[in-house]
Length: 292
Image 1 (cartoon, helix red, strand yellow):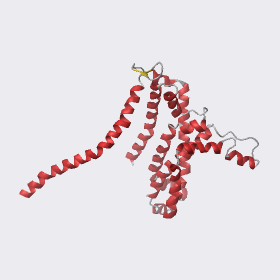
Image 2 (image 1 turned 90 degrees about the vertical axis):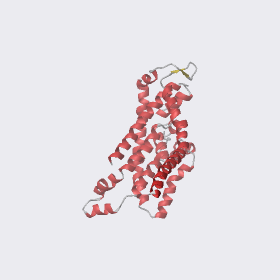
Image 3 (image 1 turned 60 degrees about the vertical axis):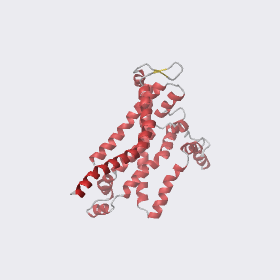
Image 4 (image 1 turned 60 degrees about the horizontal axis):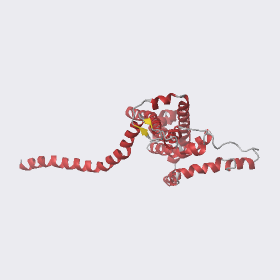
């Protein structure tokens, strides 16, 4: 009885120590999130309801004019263009990444590791440098036009640079690995015996894909689509370099409001709207994960 009482009395003390240790371990991450995420987010939210100062900055006067200004067709055009380019980028990345990820999974372990390294290699180079490289490829005197001229397929250089096409190419190139890796992680856990069982029951390749592979890899496709769609929607480096002034996206508009127009309140309002749009696919992902 004495030993039992001692064990019962020491058990709460052990739980208390574990809770304190857990809180201590969580403290650095909590402070980091508060200082570098929550507080800036609160500042942007508050700033979006204030007036612009005469020479930039903010005046502490509450107003809804920043959000009312977004009703203008000019800004809706930028929103719509950004959504179109981000959705098209996501779709093309999915079409390219799915068979590529499937090909990598079905290789031997040695080749699989090599192919994964090749997918990750672009991350070893600065994103800005990789984007500037496309100017050399897509320019009037770039690689593509030079090859086409040498083959005598064109007389005049094609206008590839500073177009929506160039922006799409740059976005696909930049964010394709974000689609490949989640698909690979999902396909790697796929039991290929299920495909063989479906084929033994009379299913052809298309039916096996639609009834077996697609449902089991749906979460990987949704995760990869979110990882591509969100940064593509807010991209500003790629449209600025490859699209020029002809392809203005939401990220460029926000950048211009903060750095050039010095209209912090309106830039903050645009940022909050962008965050609201981004939350939609994230909520869809969590909803599908809950349903599964």
